[in-house]
Length: 327
Ligand code: ADP
Figure 1: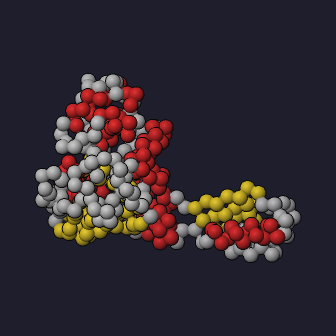
Figure 2: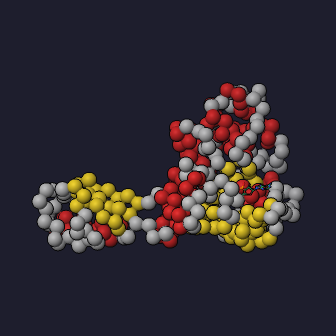
Figure 3: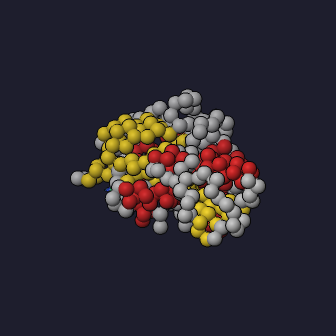
């Protein structure tokens, strides 16, 4: 979903409606080995785009081509309307890059670190703004060496944000963090989305991608195995939802018209069935319950997670290799 950019001036700005990133027919080989094999995708301005795939799938290569650090062999790439292979002098300052690991000086304070990186950009954000955006306002005077893992990762993101980027590349922002730090990093990223920053997120955590990414691309061995919103991916892969509920013992269910209901009593009066159309099946169930004055309890709807989908795509491609990426 495109959002209006509202976090202040940043270079030339990308036209409304023009994708922030456009990649078409992208190919890259290292020696004899083609590691990116005809990849196409677009990232809309203001969206969070999740790039997923097992180790070695080609994610970093694609990101580094988009950042202008690696040259492509074939295809076209435009980032903020410019070719990263031959950008204008001001182009790089419009990007924010948060790699998997950053070496920051342990003896500087958090504020000093941000101030040091500020000097590299023509239109940097104020240190206090950046501290606020990443939730480190209270830690401005702390030394880098004293930060927790989660705080350190937030400071990495702060360094990526200090130039007030239009596109932020976030590479595995929560790897190695404990669940609490991971959740607070997710809130921070949601805050950045609300501020209109275009984010390209790579992650191994399917829960993270499902929560944060507006659209997803799953890479397998340098090709696009699937792409779209989470709902589109579920639909494309014929995923079904499961509806389960309980009825009072002895309830007569013959008038209840639900697919494959017969024989699905899993435990006495508990029922479970697979639904391809949750909305329609739920309204049939509730209409029936209302008409017949039956109390439906314990109603639950569960659907495949991105992880389930990831595993099924791994099996469908015959490699099963995607499964490793979810571990
Ligand atoms: P991912 O980020 O999905 O783990 P990468 O893009 O890092 O995947 O790597 C894709 C493939 O390209 C891997 O097999 C990796 O070993 C190979 N590769 C990446 N960078 C280089 C390089 N500089 N030289 C040779 N091979 C590379």
